[in-house]
Length: 225
Image: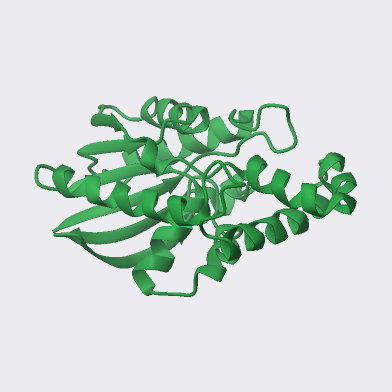
């Protein structure tokens, strides 16, 4: 049985033209996680990551703090859904929400985003979206299928991914209503750890949203986006 640890990427660039870019703090968060792992002498045999820029940048900063480099593998099935496409469809249907989105103010954008995701989930096969909700959930489950081959050779596997795939994995494991995706996603700390026991396509949730490495004197590094 393998221990699979899902890691949310470091803080991205909310409100910027290129969201898929770690902020300076995001890189520091990933480095801090690497220091935490090194100090606790936690072994990582294989490191899987999504193919988005913020995933790779998080991996680079994380590995830079380790005295060794585990086997690294990329898997696009761990990528986040296209949040801009989801918002775009919602705004097209609800043009009054455009001003909130263009404000780039979190307290105005996030409520629109939550409603946009609700619409996306309510139409699971809607071809208005580049990736319908049903396709996204199937993709995340396919990422776990890929892990079946990995855990044949490695017992300690880490995956650097995003809030959506982590929340989706937790919800599917616990058989929670899918509507809880964004509620859970919004509470996932950047570079937090969510751990599963995994064997023969069966997984058991062990911990959710561990983030002691950004607590105490590192509390200033705690972010959620």
